[in-house]
Amino acid sequence: MMKQEIKNKDIVALPLFYKIQNSPCRYILLRGSTRSGKSVAIIQYILEKFCNNPKIYIVIGIEAITAGGGIIIKLFRDWVEKFGLMGRIHIDNTRHKYTHPNGSVIRFFPADKDTKWFGLEADIIWFNEAPHIKYEIFEQVQMRLPDQEDFNAQIILDYNPTDPHSWVRDLEIADLPGGVDLFTSTFYDNPFLGEKQIKLYEMWKETNWNKWLVFGMGEYGEVAGAVYTNWYLTDEFPEVSQYWYGLDFGYSNDRTALIKVALDNGELFIEEILYELSLTATDIVIEFERLNIDKQIEIVTETARPEVIEELRRAGYFLSEVKKGTGSILAGIDMVQRYKLNVVKPSPNLHDELVNYTWMKRSGKYINVAIDKWNDCLDALRYCVMMKLNTDTGPSKFRVRKLRKR
Image 1 (cartoon, rainbow, N blue to C red):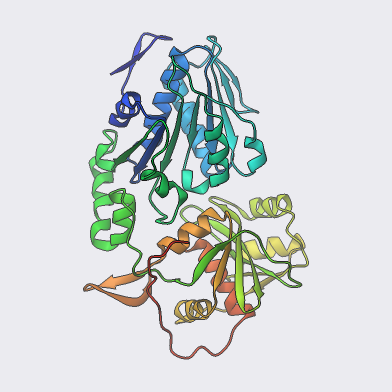
Image 2: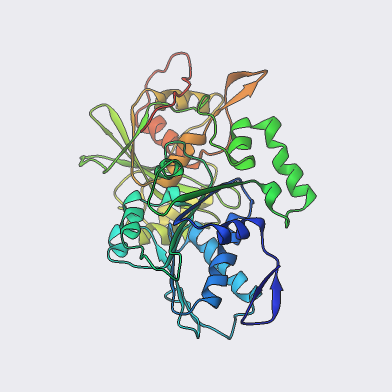
């Protein structure tokens, strides 16, 4: 049990909390499966430091204030309540800043721009979903992490091992001043999970081996069986006279994904623009306005949500609907496979999908059926290619991706 001085109450601490607390290292990496308690353990650790150490500055780096970052902000707020801190500390919801009477401060910072992090100094820095954050930001803050005799300054990174080529993986074997601790956890380490949840995750072992490795066991997934093989990362979208958008609708389980697509010198350039859950038709219009989507640029989408398509058209956007039929998924994949794919950084969700979108395996062999997961951005890409670059494909085929450094 973990006890804190603000209110004489016990907090049930996760095993990972004690591993972080007992680590003497300057860099702490928490690689784990889904629901392994990584975020909760780090929040518990940060709040314990916040309460019991005067005048320390803690920064939490998230991909964005909305989407996944918003989930972490809500989870953090829940644990502030569990610690009995509501009404005892000052909370600035606009700046996402928490100030303790002892002078300690916690701030959330989005990692969408490097410049926000230039010159930033903190005693503890936590990068949530670290592979989605640019290495340049990590590099900036590690150069300014202080050396103190009475306090162990730290950088904490948590992540699912979805990307075997991530800069975070390189840190796992790096020899950095102050030392690196790597803690691997699974959902079996989370005492708050129920039996039904555990059994659901265990089913992945039989239905999707790659998912079981990554999200079940917290290990880097196998690369064999990836649908798309010929992709690379690039720094910027090319200056082209023509480009399109691909749009895939989602709501409760799947994301609404918008990507930017261009063909340049025989190669495809693709960039993630929008990736959000629970967007209504009105929400999508608002997001398009926020993103300054050009109403003259063609948006290629599916036909599944005619009411959303109609509202977007009424708002002035130029939408085309791709025709889908029997075999269209495999045919569309075959069209996309003809091109070298240049993924404009950061595009984190598009990147994760390319790593994890795999063929189905039956009796130990891959078959020509793509698993309908990790494909919101990639479906949007497929619509675009099918509509704008459609040629006679011939027999459909697939290639198994080889492990290589990107």
